[in-house]
Amino acid sequence: MNVLTAPIIVIGLIVLYLLNSIKILREYERGVVFRLGRLLPQPKGPGLILVFSPIDRIVRISLRLITMDIPPQDIITKDNVTVKVNAVLYFRVIDPLKCVIEVQDYIYATSQLAQTTLRSLLGQVPLDDLLSEREKLNTRLQEIIEQHTDPWGIKVQLVEMKQVDLPENMQRAIAKQAEAERERRAKVIHADGEYQAADKLIQAADIISKNPQALQLRFLGTLTDIAAEKNSTIVFPLPLELLRAFSYDKYLEKKIADEK
Picture 1 (cartoon, rainbow, N blue to C red):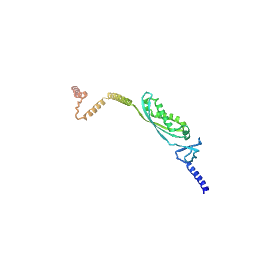
Picture 2 (tube, helix red, strand yellow):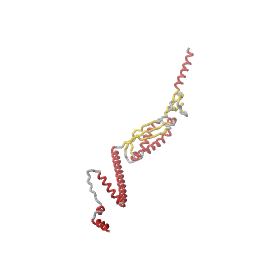
Picture 3 (cartoon, one colour):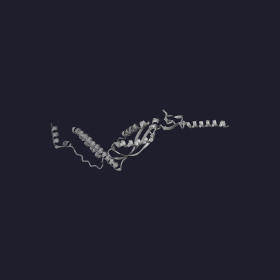
Picture 4 (cartoon, rainbow, N blue to C red):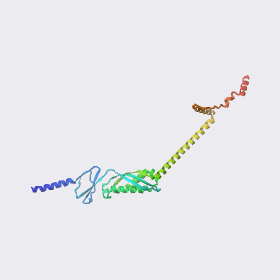
């Protein structure tokens, strides 16, 4: 009985060891395996793999896109304005081996790099560029961060500044500047309209001066507009040309012409 028990125990231990050595990696996971302290040349997974402890040690790495919130940073712009800027960083691991052996904690290292890069880059631009050139600054941030994370096997997908908090006095100054700019545009538009109207009036005056009948038609049209108001009193001027038809001189000229 004892002779059979020992092999069964050994076999059972071997089976338990093999079962314990089975690891399952999801589709988005890769396993970086160290065998006796040496890195295996290829990452394992996805699917079923064998990790023989304690000879092997596995580090699971996710290949999914990681969204990292960059906390608000106190930044002094090039024109000495203090602002707070926060951002969001999107990145993923493209080389599991590098992100394990090149850096101790790639997520923490990427976070610190993003914060320092944000402060460094935005401190080199004036406030106006910070507010109006966000797309260019986002692209520049992405390029700088990716340049440093590429040796770690990390690909930076996108960097976006979310919010820029300005001091209250600066907000009032920007509001006044925007109001003055709107007033300037309104005055320019009004002046341009007056100029165009004056130009059209000059053209209309030239046309009317060449055609007296047009002046009369314009006069009658104005009377029509005035007559629309029932409480209006209209003083109608009578042209002298009409009175000449009833003058005594005209009567004598007509009588002499009839006698001839």
